[in-house]
Length: 446
Image (tube, rainbow, N blue to C red; front, top):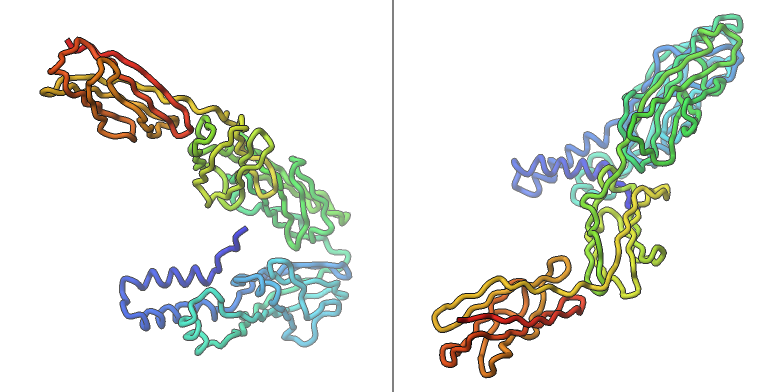
């Protein structure tokens, strides 16, 4: 699988295109591009935290501190968080070092001993490396300003941690679907939907889905519903997600539900593969697949149901190959990245059909008699005329205008000298697969 193109390389290309119309000198262009990239590369990540986070005393709790502006996997694993209290020490049970999830978000975790309202300030630091994909000349200009490694620190964000006592009413459980609630999806791609959980931590809530094909995974501040297998349905699927907290509170605080719908159209060939193939005749496969992400499937071509022929990605079209004489069928299978068969088409493989000869007319042109005929191979390909001559009466000469093509003209000469009432002509054509046609016709002259 191909790696994703670097964000900064894309940004470089955008900057380059935007400057082409106004800058003609290379050095000036590079400096302008470097300035654009410096601004982006030196932009620190931003933290997003609710104004107030509610926990309960002596209960293990977790809350998510979201981060924006991480561009690479190294940044997501290398970011570090720190929290502190402007009032002095942090409340007992809360660590100054935050955990992280796979996306680099911070996880505030702990079990605060005392009820109270605490002001907390969070900040993050990350080291950003210069993108390798940039041209060396542009990279050197950026290095002069920023260096090889750029330390970045987010702006501190202040929030309130409110710790309720054991006897207080717990916050209401809420569930909110990540927009859009009416989703259209690409068949063949695993479908994932986030549902954000408010109130208690998802860890103490049991969740259920009205559609058992969805797998529910708990995360900090949310759950993920994933349908790993491809979805193909003519009608939208409506999914209801329900949650129940287990805190001993009243039902209106403990229960919540939400719903969303998703619809996916089945994939289809574009265009359809050719309806049949022939022995020894080059076959061209150039069929795309509508409704599938080009990065999420491959096409496996097999002969006789099990003989591997080719495996191609969506960017390798067209593919040309010659069917062998032992083949009776070709099957084209579209396979998703999770190895699910998404689309299949089988066509027969046959002995090549002999080219057909069609007589298109004849006429006199001065002293010469002109006969026209056409012939085409399978797939409307050209044929070769191996022989085209007058066989009766003897002694009549003729010439063919071309030996290769689909439309031919035979010019018969010396007819006025002998003035025969009719002539017989023999034509032999061969096709690309070695098939051969012989045909004799009689043309009445007078």
